[in-house]
Length: 182
Image (cartoon, rainbow, N blue to C red; front, side, top):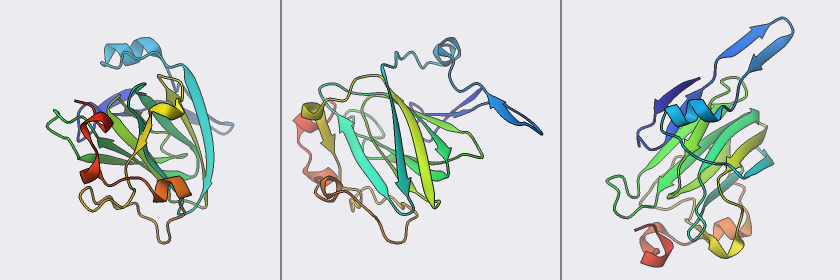
């Protein structure tokens, strides 16, 4: 595995070594000790899988009281995976990283605690697998509007498909101290 710092260095891009032949391919997608050697010392407790269709946007979500680090991979199709820094004392507060994850590049994105996460589907359909360091807790959940004018994410979709919850998320500028990481 090759682990690369993203534009926000706390976020890591992970490129696995892929062995391909006429039967298909093999890759190692997770190795705790290698991640630890590269500064990712996280115990994952929950795995999630989602299936979505072209132009779907899921996010931007995070948990405040029970924050989650995530390790995200696109198993089928292609997504634009996005992480927004919601750590008020960070030099990159309000900035984001966007990385294309596809079934062909096998790339993963590690997102530490303190970031809102979302993705858009840029293929006909996508199946996304992600590990979480904390269990889902609805009472702890927070979010940011996908089309926030301060963050200005280019989701690379023509007609966004959103849940009602994601349409109603607050703007980044309206977040209170209790909604961000200090």
